[in-house]
Image 1 (cartoon, rainbow, N blue to C red):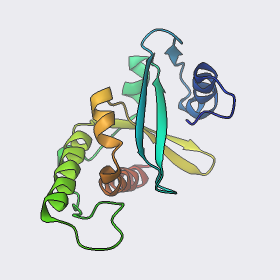
Image 2 (cartoon, rainbow, N blue to C red):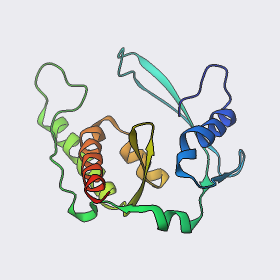
Image 3 (cartoon, rainbow, N blue to C red):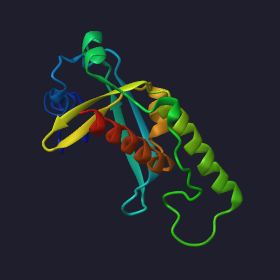
Image 4 (tube, rainbow, N blue to C red):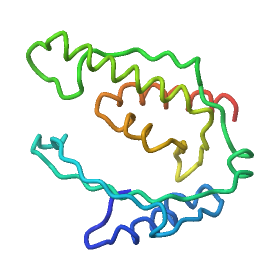
Length: 168
């Protein structure tokens, strides 16, 4: 969740647990100092194209194993076969060099492999929409957060959502 103006990282996490994650209907244990990490990165803003500083603070939390096992929904797993795109999300005009095109596809293949490794998710119904929660490692999260991941993530979410609708 994004921090609000003048909100501390701890207050933002507490708000996220109380508001966003409360729909999971289970206690989430976390501590503001244990397992906390902070990173700063610079990349072009998707809206304005300006070099922008992004700050991320991660907190480690825990849920009861019984909760995850009882409410988990199976993902497509190894059956996930996305269609890869050769065009990066930011490409608007001109032609791409073949090497850039293959880099995009390589990243998307890495994204697909991470998604195939997610065995299950928790789906929560919130205000007329379904929210999908998946547990991933920090390294896998970094693979999934790149711009090139979006078309593959969209296809995976669609596959999870359509399977979820068919079983409910």
